[in-house]
Length: 87
Image (tube, rainbow, N blue to C red):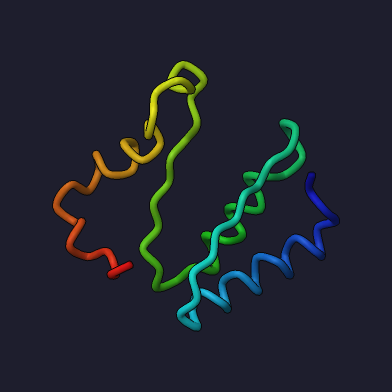
């Protein structure tokens, strides 16, 4: 469920601040079509200067395929695995 826009933006700003500070974070945006998820992602991308950004899109026909989203990401950058930080 999406919250009010002010709360959502504060959450995204806090997430970016934490990551810039070296902390690991994950965020899930979910909601019905048309409620503004893409707009929030664009807000985040616009403020993510200096980050290495990768995107995947859920496709219903791939729903049953294990790791389909991960495959979408890494097929684009197969020679970049060495750039990932250590666990």
